[in-house]
Amino acid sequence: MQYQQYVMIGRETLQSVLFTLGPILITALVVGLLIGIFQAATSINESTLTFVPKLIIVMGVLAIAGPFMISTMTNFFLSVFNEIARVGR
Image 1 (cartoon, rainbow, N blue to C red):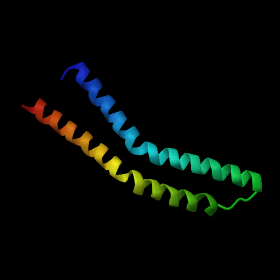
Image 2 (image 1 turned 90 degrees about the vertical axis):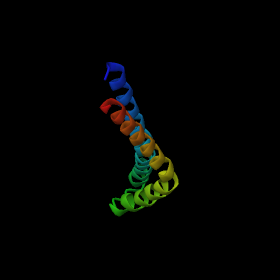
Image 3 (image 1 turned 180 degrees about the vertical axis):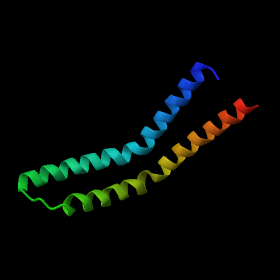
Image 4 (image 1 turned 45 degrees about the vertical axis):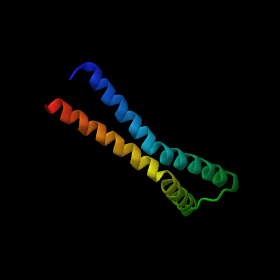
């Protein structure tokens, strides 16, 4: 394999990870930040107040973005396996 092929596979890997995990991580970050601001403003220090809404909202994002994430990872794995088969010949 040439250097450009390694770079292409690395870039494709990072894009797939970003597109797959991005919606979940961004949602959890935004919800955690909003709940943290709410807790700081009201002086409520309940740990379940951060966990339960974040869990519910992240599960909703998984339900909505799940098919897109699965198709992204499937396409990535197919391209990697095709590249392995091509190099193995």
